[in-house]
Length: 124
Image (cartoon, rainbow, N blue to C red; front, side, top):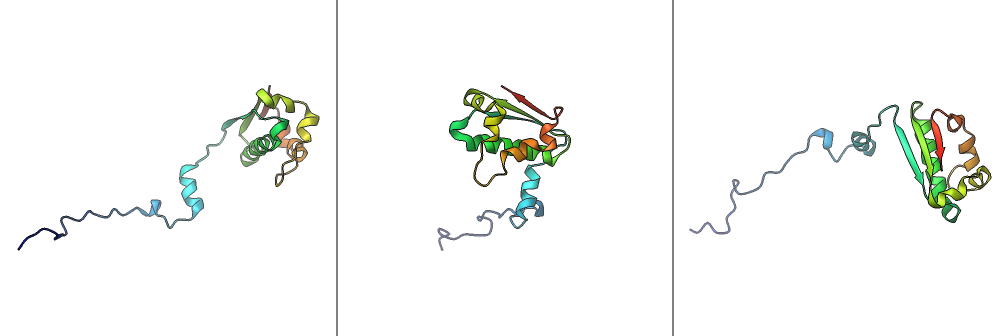
């Protein structure tokens, strides 16, 4: 009898089992937490290179910086305005930006955490 076409247990690849820590049945937040361990006291630089021509990008950048500050009392955020971002240097222009679905810009800028000069810097 020929052994061509016969598959034995020794010929089959072993199926690797995942540890419970890396299971696909985990909650999505648990899986993300494994990769996104934020250290306290981190410093973030948010580069804003869009201006009034794409105000949504500016609003999202400020909202992200605000969220980082609110999440940890020791976090520092440096906002850097360059290129077209220079158009929003004036406070009146920056406050006039309003993207759909995001909190009002003035509410973000007036929050005490955004007013803390030791935690927030603006550079042009």
